[in-house]
Amino acid sequence: MRALNRSFCYFIRQIAADRMLVMVCAAPPLCGAFFRFGIPVLEPLFVRWFGFGLESYYLLLDLLLSGITPYMLCFVSAMVILDETDSHMSAYLCVTPIGKNGYLVSRLAFPAAVSGLVSFCVLAVFRLSVDSIFIMASLSLQSAVLGMLAAMLIVSLSSNKVEGMAISKLSGLILFGMVIPFVFKGGGKYVFGLMPSFWIAQWAITPGFFAILLFSGTSVLWFFVLWRRFSLKLT
Image (cartoon, rainbow, N blue to C red; front, side, top):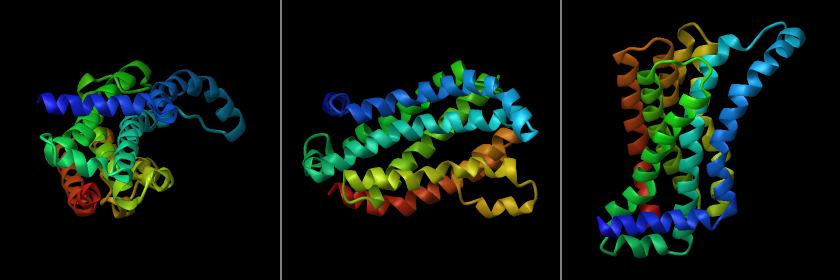
């Protein structure tokens, strides 16, 4: 446990030494402030200019806020992993007492858990429509899993940190599934059923065990698809 704590502290120091990563960590509260205070101000302008308001999409904005927070924080984790991979530090750490499993916990599991907690706090402060603590906690937990998958996707498809920043723009599409149930009402929306984020939105609209089960199943599927390539990058 002591080695794990030291590894995680080293991870935090790496983030603190990179201004870009610090700014990324600060982005979720800024996004939340814009959603909470900016969107209601823009509401009359949307009605005047486009003939419709945004109030019916407040739940979608809450979903995006809950998803953006873990995505941003897990993106930071992915950048640190890629940096350590470039310098062969990850391979070194995997053969120290912390081991490969400990390295994964300190670089992937811990950041995902922290991102879920931060997501809950950001959502609790800046939410537009969600009032239930249970729903906020569930959304934050599911989004933390989504953030971890995004980090694995970035690391798996990138050869270095520069590529990682480019791939992160593509991996942001992992949140796209949240939009689908709000845009498509018919059965055609289930074409996007392999995206875990789709089931997060579906559960938020009509809470039920079935959506949670399918979110879990698609998340496990994505994990195993990404795991082999992700694991090889560490060694």
